[in-house]
Image (cartoon, rainbow, N blue to C red; front, side, top):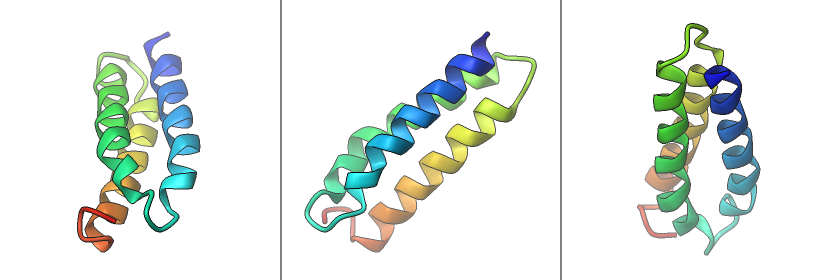
Length: 73
């Protein structure tokens, strides 16, 4: 059940990251990356790891976007 919850958190976070790819909305990633990491933490407590890995990929995508935008844009 925790794996499903983790995957759901990752999916919602990924959907919310779509507008954050646009210029001037990249600061939204400062909120979404910790949410994805929280989903990975929930997936850590599950016996299956697919939700955890999905959340980590989503968090890495958001962190990459922050890195490329200089952390602000």
